[in-house]
Image 1 (tube, helix red, strand yellow):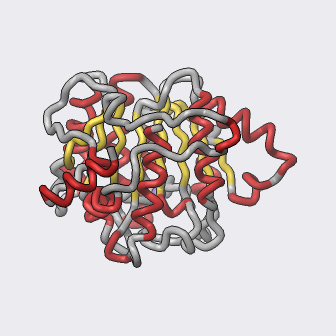
Image 2 (cartoon, rainbow, N blue to C red):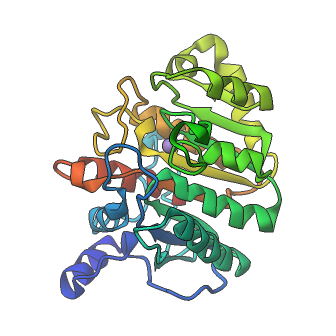
Length: 312
Ligand SMILES: [Mn+2]
């Protein structure tokens, strides 16, 4: 399948994500991958509007499903996501100039696919766009659980920049709009230096489960970690990955890299915890890849690797 994908990409010059069949109109299926090419919500280093193209290009011919984590466990491969009913739905037609309009377009597009019964994997785009997807999916499923991997809490008070919505506020918005079940929200990878601690106090006050890299690595907290990860999936849940959760030595091409991040193995362990949930996640995203900052396609390759595990 991956050889076909590579040949098809060479022949056509088109590179749908992982070689999935392209389908621009919502239809009943297992799921759809949607690009979200907007970075109007970025504070410092822009470029994430080009993320969907970079991830599609980096996905050409890499293979269709992950190597089993351990060859000795004898489990067979899980097959190509196309065979399980995944499509590439193209890009959400966000315009680059207005974040408000982009959020409405994301909500409408994700909502239309969700209405057709599809799970959605969004390729960002900056992290503010997650709010549009959550608005769409909470309308269908009710308040969602959220596993949020990020260096930053993304729950700033909008007053600091004079706007309620940017890539550092979407989680607060989602909580205040009732899109999430706060007791089923978990953040992992938090480590960004603080301007103040109001944001952390807010998250603690609503019951969000917060994990720094050091906490994740503390063996005394292993049971607690397992319990928290399980709790997120006790109802419909969303999985949101800011690529800056990973260490910048691995993923430098993000808007706000922060040293001391997660390894690939740590990130995969968190993603794999979702496999133990009673129901598969209803939506997921990979946000903040800014390919203009990438060298040797390294960050985009990591994003594709994570996507393969999300779809496995
Ligand atoms: Mn983020």
